[in-house]
Image (spheres, rainbow, N blue to C red):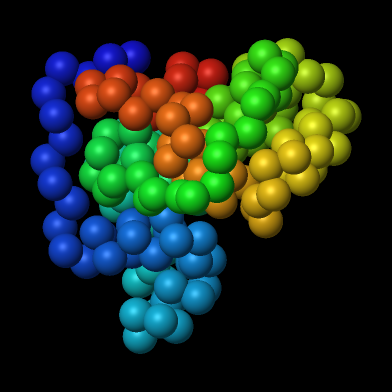
Length: 159
């Protein structure tokens, strides 16, 4: 899906929550840092998903990918060089950025569902990242994921 008009900028409160997500802060920790209730943070995350046209219940890595793809936030800079990914690893990276459910990641990456957790762990180890959200953020910084304006943040398989 390609959008025809650029997204409107995020309101300040959503932008602050979005920045925390890109920094890898968990939703419960966002609530604590921003002196908000967990319910308020959940409400902001729901608003972010709607604003970015993410599927309901999208996990933080998908939301972060949408934020960076639509340039609501710029990707961070990193001094770490981009890893050389094999085509299957790149498909897995893209699938993890665009899908929240393991079966959708398996389908989009062409990996058997039973092997998705170990394949993701191997990719995290190879890229020296702590979790999928950090992997997605660094992949944008490395230019491994499409960040062009007007491209979809999520694929049809994620809907």
